[in-house]
Image 1 (cartoon, rainbow, N blue to C red):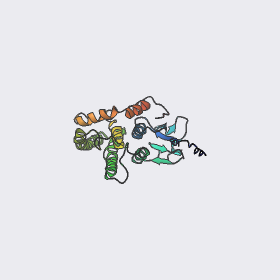
Image 2 (image 1 turned 60 degrees about the vertical axis):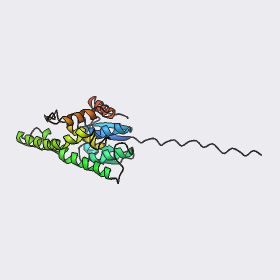
Image 3 (image 1 turned 45 degrees about the horizontal axis):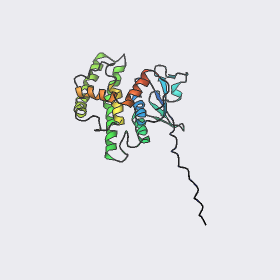
Image 4 (image 1 turned 180 degrees about the vertical axis):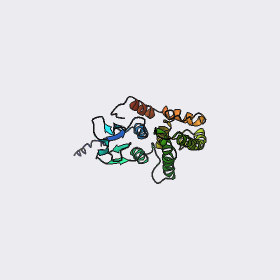
Length: 225
């Protein structure tokens, strides 16, 4: 008697990745998670916010979506929303483990968080007053001197290794690149720190960064990685 063949089991298909929605404004710090989404290869929709009017293209009041009023904001497929850049980029990185951030619990992950905090407080917030037209020139010059000290610290680090964490690009690089990208517009001269200039060029050449740059500069309202 011939034993019946076992039923053929179809291979399990990998679950479809859910779509996330990134609220961003071209050239703002939301450029960092925009980069991270492309670098991670995640599907997403990018929704442009006019930060002058706090409106979306369809007239929706952005405050009704994010009461804080600023970008970035990440909306998950279940409607959950995440704000604060350092949190958002880590969430994106953890959707693709081992690509843009070290594993949670490792010392390297704490080093990444150390960098994210440094960029937030010592670069991002130091640049911020330079954006306001009513900031006195004496204050702007003082801010630029503070930034120069931070550049003195960063220059030798990126002179000896390609990225902040060493050989691997992480979300900290996406964040720092986004902030340093403001330098020409805000008349912050990076030329005294040649390694920092080369770092910016190196990051800008990455495919994911190029995609994010092109998406923001062509003012596309939506994109999928």
